[in-house]
Length: 147
Image 1: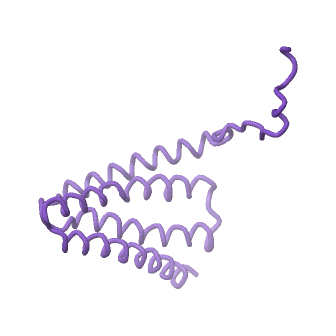
Image 2 (image 1 turned 90 degrees about the horizontal axis):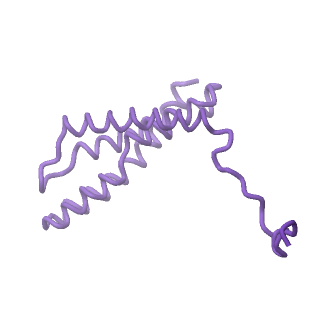
């Protein structure tokens, strides 16, 4: 029958459109992401990676982005009342577009495939340690100097 729901219909949760009501935030993330990606591209042009060498451009992008996100998230969640679009625009958009796990992974793969195993391991571990430390440092500095 057409009007009768299937027997398991009551057990299924209702379908909710995940972006319903998120139009402004979606635009903020998209615009911020484009700006962050352009900034990353610019840094990459200024600090190109030479094959077999430590990828300083990507390393500095990821570490500085983590420092900035540490500062930003403390400022907008603990120290100030920010507009609701600040966090999606700056954190997810700009800094999400600026930092890059994909280039980090490709850089490490190129080092490994080029036989630079020690440099690849140093790059992988060094980036992770420096990025986490930078996030912590940014958050701590914002808390200390932002009050």
